[in-house]
Length: 256
Length: 130
Image (cartoon, rainbow over all chains, first blue to last red; front, side, top):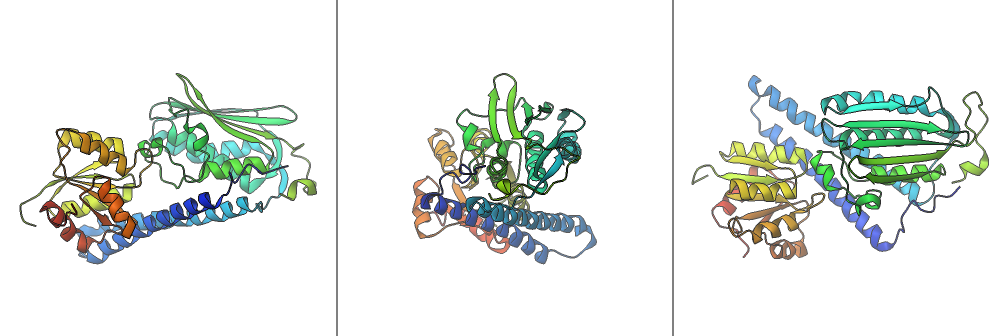
């Protein structure tokens, strides 16, 4: 198994760009936290300001959580770049992972009046790293929910044969420029649709996702379906994943 | 603040930053207008003719520099004062910002205490760098 495509070159130039973007993003979060802290300090403590104070505290908390998420993502980035992504292969049920994620995102979909459809077999065994695959599916389902335009339909479907599985996430009515098809997988890339959909983030999710897929020997790509939307297709080998089996992970797949 | 309330367009993709500047502008007696992207900012300048634009430099898609260039090309609104808001304003960045068509910049973090003074200078036509 190879993960040679995951760091996209790693030249000193791209590394400098990465560091600059990172510095910018960290400073951006810290700026918001400082500014809202200043607002709180300057605020009168009368009861009618309670609601505003709660709003400011919520903002500070959200920004701190985004910093924490960024920190976690950077740790993963480092592990990906040095081919040290820790992997623990074990039998998993991909249907359970996908439906669990769909359940977590249903409320957000409803908020955006996005129909969230699912089709797939009741159980599909796959051997993989539970933490990474759950993170991967969470990212893809999140994207399908937030990048599908309000009032449209997001469809998630899982198909499998004995050797492999594929998961299609179709964002009905979503738009993507052809030149963005690969750029969305580059670190820190955020398309205009990120602003249109008011999606917070640092543009690392799909890059990390593709690295996780590569580490499992699979493929992740986006396609534009003219007149229909944008489809993200995840293909993964099942690695003989059978849910009743529980052997130790084969050494060949742990030495990534 | 002399001269009464002004209409200030805030072009900023980060919702928390947008809300912050909205709060500060309102507290200063101005009317905030909001845009979440470069294209939306350009559109609102044409529609609403604000007295001043506060523009984040780093936005997905069309960034602040591109948006500023489009506004400057507009024969009707091209002279609207444009102030860049940036997390990084180092010595070299200053010239880049001014060359991109901005009248000046405010560095993040935005300090509520200082913001009124900075904005006042720009609204009064002071503090312009060209």
